[in-house]
Image (cartoon, rainbow, N blue to C red; front, top):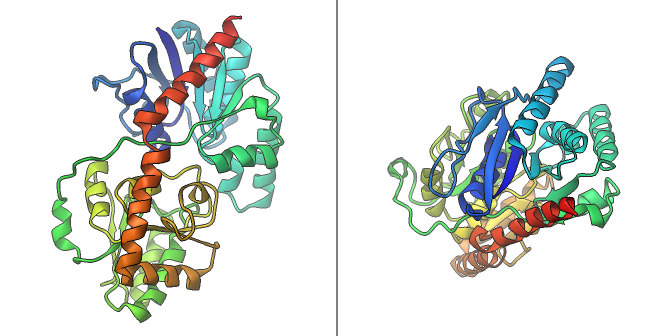
Length: 377
């Protein structure tokens, strides 16, 4: 039995990623552990038989705090010595930095998945350059980078000058959502609506969506956008509510703070399409889920989105900030039943061909096995 230690903050997409691996990987060959901040409320990770994957506390925080980060690093070293893993899988920037250092020190095979590089997450130029420089320096460690999408793989080559010999790619993938019970919340929603999923943040760029809906409303007066998973706290949530009220969009937008994933999928399943205005992505689960549910998508032309959506095939790609074009693309799908049906069929095909974890998990097992076998030579 090979031991995999994941080092991560298992929240949002990272948590979903690890949970899906634990539930689908060959449990006769691989055993999962997680080093994380166990006091932070994250996604509960369970394996194939629904037993909770062991979590060990290392007080891994998102913010840079040199004293805490040094303590965290030593805790990682201590726990890795106790567990004796065959491979370390680090997720996102902070875990990636500390975990790759620990792997190099202990000579344990280590792979790192950025889930969207950290330097994309800030518009402050000094921070962006600092994070990018750190990523470039860390590529010289003996670890490998496992991109979660083709565009993340290409960015590692083009932005960070990675050699292909130090890169793997494994697309974010989900299980097929075969049967969904109708959400009770559907009774409070209009019969026809469109969906977007994501917490208001710099990355998700929700402000653009509200401006788009304002334009769409001129053509479709009863257009309704359901914003799923906006959470309970956001620095920009008040600003969004002010915009909605100022522009008389109260009847056109519903914000749903938090529901279980299955209920969110039930709501998404009843929508006409899924839209996203993200500034950057790794490979967004919300869009993969939309494809699996046969939903056309109108999304910004950024990393992650460009891997999932083929323009005019299963949705549309629009340039960042092009509110007019996004509004026009939404209107065309919304009003054209034949186009919507064709894109729906293609969306489902794209999911089955490329993002079904039942088919794709074998490739990840081969990557883990390759790194482990190489270390034993």
